[in-house]
Image 1 (cartoon, helix red, strand yellow):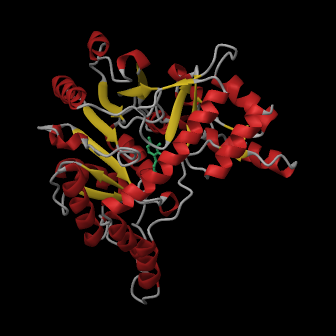
Image 2 (tube, protein in one colour):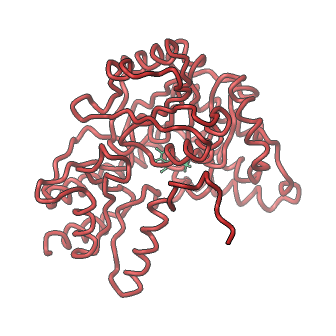
Image 3 (cartoon, rainbow, N blue to C red):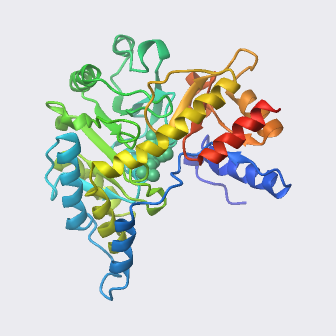
Length: 384
Ligand SMILES: Cc1ncc(COP(=O)(O)O)c(C=O)c1O
């Protein structure tokens, strides 16, 4: 028998990859499960984006390998997008690295900076990929708890009590997934001061800033941020382009060059028409974001109803693609609620525990479903 590499020890298959198989099985048995789990936008990108892809892909000269640093057109579009929406000036030639989705960037960053045994601060609850990428790269995960009573912000006083001498990176994500918490300028200032004091690189993951939020913010907009911050962004959520796989890393030139040393050995760039269509998507104006958010706002009202039917407690100030809610005491944890609703009402809701131990008493509902789906889910839960 050939054993798998040690680095895979403790790394299971991604939760959703497993769960979707189970849901498929249940559907084959005729259950017709309503899946409110995954944050994959169900609406299409803007028609002009599809038009660019169509027009460009029929050209004969667009099929070759591309520049490892991405098309200059796409890099310029990202720079303009950051200037327009986040008021951050980035040099398109040196401070922007397009990615095949921001998820791969998480791995690239970990592989670029971590040696065996280096420690990484991770949000609990938080996006599970941070933990897997750190482990795969040989790093050691050190959780920092995000608590409801502290606005789901890092507790800097508690962090200062820890031995931070081996900490090299800190993953941060606002608007926060799964809790929907927005950042504040004060918290960001504290974060940058903390990173400078302890020589820690802050890796900020920022894919949700346009969803149900009128004031998108970049951590790079703070004074001195470029000294210590790498920021990931994505077209998956705000441009309805999750399957296209387009993201970006923004940082100082030195950081981009360092990550490129790793990334250029892993892939050979994206299909040029995809990059040009992505550039079009980045040029869309406020009307686009307003139209997307109008749909999510209507859906969110339905999710409130669903959460009320489940006797959950939640804040209405959340932003992003999900609603995060505390479960009622009758359930041991979010897994118990999720199983109950899956097996008895044929509705799938994500248990909060998959985002870390601090999420165990919570569930997360995605806004990526039609109004009809939410209405049917409410009916099923109420009629159980
Ligand atoms: C917090 C967070 N970061 C990153 C990603 C990955 O996004 P992308 O599609 O750009 O790889 C997701 C996707 O669900 C996410 O929730």
